[in-house]
Length: 423
Image 1 (spheres, rainbow, N blue to C red):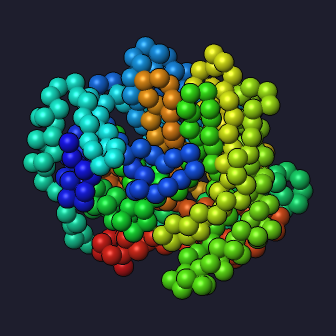
Image 2 (image 1 turned 90 degrees about the vertical axis):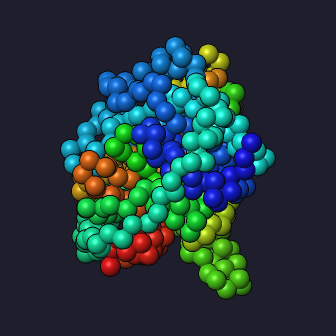
C-alpha cells in the first residue's frame, strides 16, 4: 500500500508515460457536489478501441458488453459528425481520432491514502517498476513560436457576426473558441501535467497517453456521470477572475453570483442539459439540484449548476452519452445550428478539445469531464495545442469576451513561459 505523495506521484507519472497506453484521473482532494474524479490510474493495453465509425458509441457499448471491464479513454468533439448530419472540414494538427478507449492491464486505485493494485500479472512487480521509474524532469528547449490561430481583430469581428445570428433568431447562445498551437515542442508531457495541476488543481484532472497522442488536462467541469440509474451533469457557464485580496475576492465572487448576463448564459445551458437528459431518462425524473452555484478554483471563480435524472430501465449507458454529447456548455443552443456555425467561424478542428475524457467501469457506470483547460499533443509531429472559449449571447461585448478567453488561457501560458517553451 502506498499514499499518493508528491515523490510517488512523480514516479507514477513517469511509469505511466512509459506504458504507451495509460491514464491517470485525479480529484486533487477538491470537494465537489456528487464527488469529483476518483484518484485512479490504468496502464497497459489489453484491448484498444479507436475511432469506430459509423457509430463509435455503439461499438463501445458492444465491446463493453462483451468484456465487462474497465474502459479508459475519451470522446472527441468531432464525434458529433456521427451523431448529427455535420462535418468537420478544418485540419487537426494534433491528429486525434473521434474516440479512443483501452482496457488496461493494470489498475491502481487510491482511496483514503491507500493504494490497491489490480493487475493481469503481479501487483508487487508493478509496484517495483513504479518505484524504480526515472522521474521525468523539465527539459530546456529553445523557445518556440506560439501561434494564436485568429487575431484579436478577427475574433472581435466574428463575435459581432455571431451576435447578428442571435439577433436574427438563428441561435440563442454559442461557445466560440480561440485555438493556439506550438510546433517543435520537446517538453516531457509528465512535466507539463505536474506543472499544470500544481498551479491549477482541479476536480476532474487527467493525464492520458494513447500511443503517440497525449492529453494534459486540468478540468473544473463534469460532462456526465452515471451511477446506477442516476445521471449527473454539471455545466459551467459564468467565469470571473480571482483576487489575492480576500475582501475583493469575495466581492468578485458575489458579483458573479448575481450577474444577470452570466445567469442568463447558465440558465440557457441548464435548459439544454435538461432536454438532453430527458431523451434517455424516465418521465419527470429530470431535476435541477443546484442553480448558479459559485465554486472557486486557483485562478477563477466559476458558476456551476447541477442537473440530475434517472435513466430509463434497460437503456444502455451509451444512449445516455449519445443524447447529451457534445455537452451544451461547449456548444450553445440550439445545438445543431451552433455546431454548424462553429465550423463556419472557427478555423481549426477542435479534436479532443471540448470533448470528454473519463472511464466506464465494469458495471457500465461512468464519469466524464469536459476537456477544457488542457494541453494536447502528438509525439509524431511534436505539435502541442490548447484552446479556450467563452459563451456568446445577445448581451456579449466582443472585447470583454476576448479578455475572458485570455484569462482562461493564463494558467497554461504561465506554465509555457516558466518552462522556457515560449518567450
